[in-house]
Image (cartoon, rainbow, N blue to C red; front, side):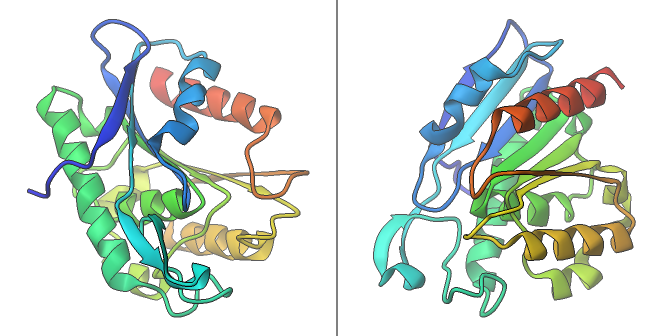
Length: 221
């Protein structure tokens, strides 16, 4: 099994039976979304896991070393994709999923969430699990390695619901790329709930309330 990534763990109550593994964006760290745990009012105790991506040189940023789930080679986010980096991060996230299962959390009560790069890894990983997860929150992101996904997605994961959110004015991951990814996932047979907001590459209050409602429904189902 892959070594466990360093991470922050928060529990919203005693003996949580649900876990949310939340992946940050490029150049941030696990601390970035920690405030989310206090913002979301969910009906049950939840364990939040906020891992830190490894430090690596990022080509588009002149080779500057920062926390990144994979390398980005050009402004066209979905061109020249770092397949090796993406798959390595998948393995690292799967180790966190296995950790939660070892703690007694069933796969159906484990959620992957991620923003930007983190959302891409969340989507990529969830589609390749032998046991379907509880759901995916894919925020301001896209589906990486979409061509290989056609061959690799496991039929059982089509039971995994997906929440996708995107800003209509996103200058980092274009709205159009998010929409193309949504359409690909729908074509693969996934239940995608799409939300769009009058924002750029960020998270807004309205989005948080929509996430809260979506998670509450998944947990109560």
